[in-house]
Length: 313
Length: 235
Image (cartoon, rainbow over all chains, first blue to last red; front, side, top):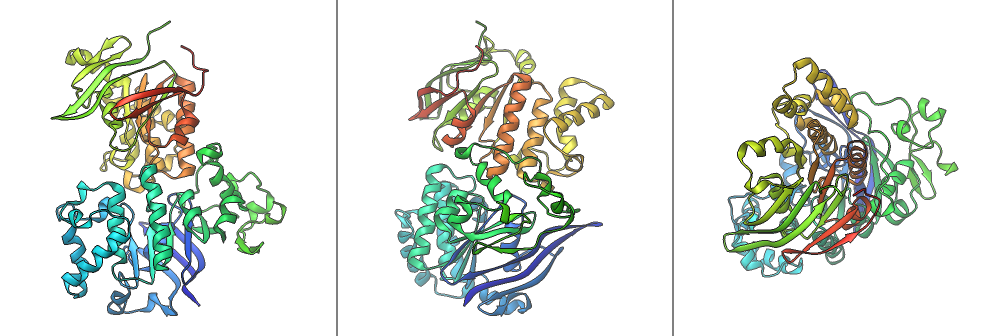
């Protein structure tokens, strides 16, 4: 059974007289023990999906669709029931670890706080956390607890956040852009960290990232997002080593080692999306049909792709 | 042979007793991109800040077209200032959040050019076009823009002053791959058109190898080697 199933998820934000379509008709499943990567450029709606799952979006967000977590519909739960799931059974590793920690509290207090909120004995909780911190490659966790967040490096802060989000042994972990702004050494560390979480804890993860190297190393399957839609969904190695969708091809070519070739143009305005395929204005293979008709998700070589011309490629 | 745009000689910096770097020397020619590579905490950013006058080094000299900026008078330095610009790592903190993108874009022009409103507007629009911004972006506040769009505005407002030299401190580390490629290619285009020189600070060697003419390696507080990548710069 899938641990998480998303059906026809759409998110719109109303801004004065306009509506911004952040996510449109997204569907995917995450199986137990699987890591699914969501990749795509900034503004493609990746983070919004993560936040929508936990109902953390602001009040002007208009969310439709169904999200089933172990068969339970998250969108119809009462707030009190949702609180039993949020942070406990589904946890979120937020973007920007520096901003996720309170700068005026020592690290120990921030870890304890998690347990306090849950009404669990702090000492018991700390013991558990310290064990976890050792396992997650943090050296000398005791000493680290007596420091403030700004005294840690970016990589260490991220590990600390990882420990906090794992402290309740959640069934699903959502990690939002864990490698943004980290230097190559810390990035390697992040790959190690996530591989460890995956292997040692068998965690099911939804990994939101634009770091293609991290995605390839850690994810089992990858969903590529463009302008709020999933355009390609398949095994990680297939998506990144032999991409089918023209947009995914463009992403891979934009990597420095593949030539640093930019995609022409910009992603479309989300207030008035173009007719036909959202990508046709920037697509090298674009044809008359792409202007007229919006492509549906189709089965292609065992994966999914949203393109009119997948058979030609 | 003309003077290099920028020459840094025996630059040293310490905070209290902590030495950040010592005897750092390099020069950058007109139209050249010099990469500065180092790990986080190696002092890359501090070198960049010294060059634009945001930090004062504890020793050495920084020569812009031959003149040492460290023993320049305030007035003299103020004249030079528009010519040496910096792009910061975090695009979201570079703009005034209470100003719309277009106001942010023309602000340096207002301060330095003394142009009238009409001329300002026209020039601003040209710059926006040069950096690939659409009119709809210009009417937004920074918070409503993506990282890539903000970096374009930052570039546009810097180019407004027709600088000779730009320190780009990790300009793309917070951006995603496709936008990174766009911004770096845009910087190359601006270089071809205006002959501006860059000091590109980064911890991503793949990026530096792709866009720089030479790369200086900063290790253990000093520059250990300078590698030639492309040899097609006029000197």
